[in-house]
Length: 581
Image (cartoon, rainbow, N blue to C red; front, side, top):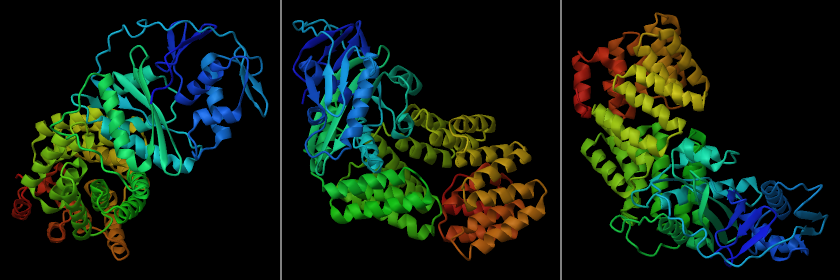
């Protein structure tokens, strides 16, 4: 649905183009979001007349929308005044009539349409794009899961545009509510264009507005407004992505994404999925447990949803990654969910990614892992997670140069994610490029000084450099930030290597005691014994870890175990796992 009928309206130094949805001041575009812009258009349609708050509410939000109208309207008018540089106390443009409405008081000129004035510009070349977090217009913070979830879904839809680099969710979410200009954001994300918009919803309806901005000159290229039943949300996402693709003269690859009608969804199931995504992306054990409950609810409501099964599989594999239970329980569940997703729809890349992770971390099916990674990459070349999985596989297989090159592709899609920047430090550590690993971890910590994993990976490289005091300090801080028993075990090992045997043995006893209360991997206890040079206990526990399919057994080829390589027991374990040696 277009924004309004084509028309130019002038007042003061300003000009409104209702055709393109632009406000310009002396020829330069002024950024203005959809709601403030619509309020301005309504006021300009009736200059000198009072426009009531009720009339504005009807124009700005669809019928039956659940929104705090008073708060939303006040926010829209404040943004409009800021864009016009108007003063509420001494207005030049918008006069307030308390408890009633507003009136546009400046002279308004309506020149005839200028056909080619702005359309004559050739569309710019756009090779990269970021979808910023959709603004939640409900006024209810409890609805943030809905706007955040739709942002991620829209990113996935737009990422299907062929030959376009689309920035991943983890790098755009930090800009939620940011006061930076679009050109600055685009420069930081290294993209040509920005999509920004809003989302409002009623009980069973959703309305999304979106606009495409060419970042270098802050030029408005396109805007659209869409309203659909919630059950048609998949079609809505595809439609927005198609409209964006047409604006930047790129086509969706028909070979990858057949043009079949999008399936209708159960609205309650879709909401449950969005809540699951919201909690999964927090990436804490407690939130992952919540996410699995929501995805399970979505599946119960809509058993035919391949995406719900794929999301559940990812959450289950992350729980296994965090060691939140025996590997023999969590990873088979993740595999079953992924396989069910692929039975329903073979083209769901997230399910292939989850299956690849199970092959790597639990089954040690290396050929299967590579095949799933490559299939996911074919289906979703703009998904940073897909590149990370492939790079991780290559790294474990000691194909380090390939792994680093592949990981750099992930960082192009996620340039400011402390998670991915930090994990690159681990990839470099495995390649024994310790100085580069340390530098990479410091980059992650510049973004988030309390990111536990970056501290963990930094400590590993410092240990290999012989900087044991600094390594211990980083392990201690990582553990204090919630890194868990695996990090505690590595701290015990570092104490042992530093000659502080009593502290190492104290941590060893602590882990053994804790194992009676919660699941503690035998691998973690083996790590401490390895630092204490008790190789008999080390290999006994490593054998237990092998029998339990503890995923961290694949770390045997990592630098921290280089001193064990001459031991026939190490060689036998590595051979059985299928790792290069």
